[in-house]
Image 1 (spheres, rainbow, N blue to C red):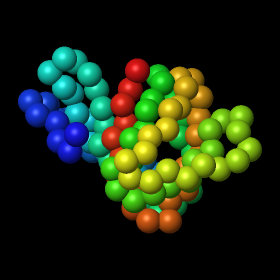
Image 2 (cartoon, helix red, strand yellow):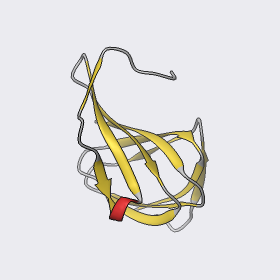
Image 3 (tube, helix red, strand yellow):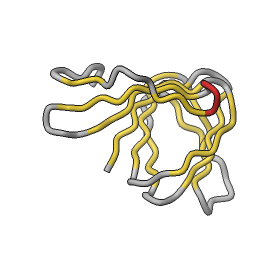
Image 4 (cartoon, one colour):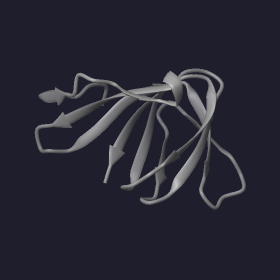
Length: 103
């Protein structure tokens, strides 16, 4: 799916790590919440509350989930799951465009 129809968008951006990650919250008609964003070249650690599915839509990244020792590379068109109440490290050598699906 290349677009979402019939959505509401929160105007204020979510800005993390001094602008290295910027996203916007999108609310679908069924109440589902997603964020659409870009992570600029950097290495960051994110904490999660709810489970997340990170869907890559442009660029690539390397990810290490909490408790793992190896990095896994993900490209556009690939996704990775992050458990709730956890964390993950992400390293990007180029801008990484993503959709974060919650729940």
